[in-house]
Length: 105
Image (cartoon, rainbow, N blue to C red; front, side):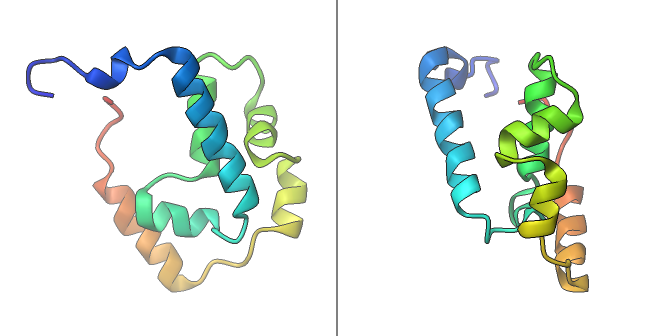
């Protein structure tokens, strides 16, 4: 917001946490929505969420954060859920990433 006031910052932490957990559970359920597709459309994916929880203070390493978000070790996720990315998906992801401004939100 132009005046520096961000109503989102007033959202109760318990409410925000509940919404975040619901988002993660939804993404676990919708494993058909590939990370590459999420990146191409929205500029973030499950791995981004794992990075963001680490940035927010999660004490685990990258692998532990990804396991928390994916609901299984990342190697298992890749073997059972991840599909090969098409050139079109990669191009869409690259275009989407280019739209991401530095994280000031």
